[in-house]
Length: 186
Image (cartoon, rainbow, N blue to C red; front, side):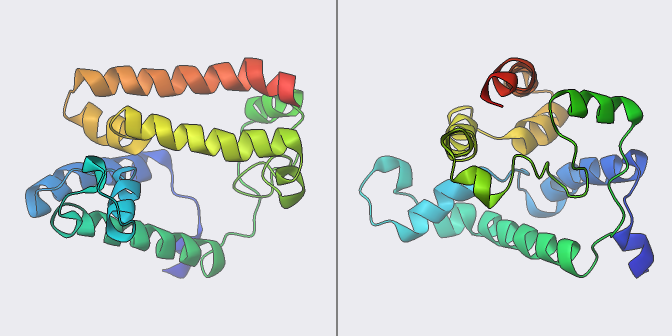
């Protein structure tokens, strides 16, 4: 069993399992799948604020979401420590060629080591990309009313037009940054 859990699952298994979470969460719990609203709930729980945005019953609306976020953190820790796969990530030759053209050659981890490392965080470009970029992603997710999981998984499965536009925006933004902004920064 541990061998099955520690190996990468093919898209035709993992994708439908993720897709089935959406109706299961609706049917059994009456909740919509999404993670970006956890930040709002966490702020409402810990920040003493009179701002209307944080002034609501976070226990009733968001406690389950905070528990799910905690479960994701615990699951990620278990997956990367106890169930870690020591083999390099299987990438297609075309992907390796494309990433190498961008200067990314270390494919041993889950993220490119050339970008996501402590030394890079201490450089102006790395700080700009990791910290400011992370802030903008978080702000954009809240401004759009959800992140990629909320819009692309839950919103699209509900045939919501706003989620279609948001998901298209996420992908177009990612492509623009990868092909036009990233080569300027690195």
